[in-house]
Image (cartoon, rainbow, N blue to C red; front, side, top):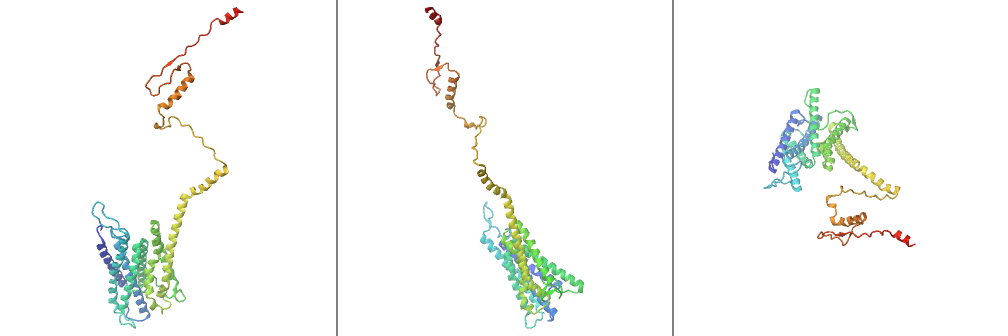
Length: 409
């Protein structure tokens, strides 16, 4: 795996994209989530619209999965191109920014090639559908698959650029499929028959509608799920110190996969009233905004926390600075410090003066303490002659002088 380069990763992206498309469509057809009805009654209309939304969703998510998996299994870092090979002791060199940008674009496009398998897998069974006003329902289904691949390529580029976007997209996929599976199982237990599941929303029926458009339980479910997923994906990325811009926009790109599917199914939904599909179409943009708001607020809180920690680390020094500057003005001039005498032991070894500097002091001390012998000539300081001194003759005191003067008187 460490030896896989661009060619192996491109092949892996195509294979994973195609495999994800086939696997999701197999589950959707097996559980009855997607059906191509032959009737035009309200139930058939709902099944047709739900199948178109699921087609867009599956094509986009298969593309994103193919790009993300191929990138994570490549020898480079997350979102980075594989390192360049170089002969010699230097080994491999890191990829340049231009190579990384090209890597993300190539992986997203090649994963989209794998996601194009959705076109064939929905166009063939959609030929059996009966749609008034059109003779080629398979072309409509295939067109929705192409739109889903295009949306998936855009989200895949963002997912390769920021790990928080990839995490949000994967969590959204897991949530949508868990919700759809639970809805089918609940319908099978309640009605003893497989029923179609709506994309990203539970079927609550025609109750608790606001202005015959917004299903309050469905709105709470979609908006709450978008907020929780946004926080769950952005929190670890913010703790890792990822790029704040990628973390901030991650909350909107996961729900974008759902809202884009409902957006392109909007014209047929225009005439439907008090239906979960119309409610989901109307609420999906608000789920995007709530997810974006959740990730942005989380990034802002993380930035404030970092600033508080930095202020707490440098706060005492910053507060003591003005107080230390104002203290000398209040206390008056500071006393001049008196240097302490340094002992001989504290001096370094090379701090002693040469021997000649101490000879004059030693001679002065000798003259003061013992003034008897006086040197006849200066001592030679270069050590070439010895010092010679001669004692001055002492004058003996006069004897009998005082008696002699008394006799004369």
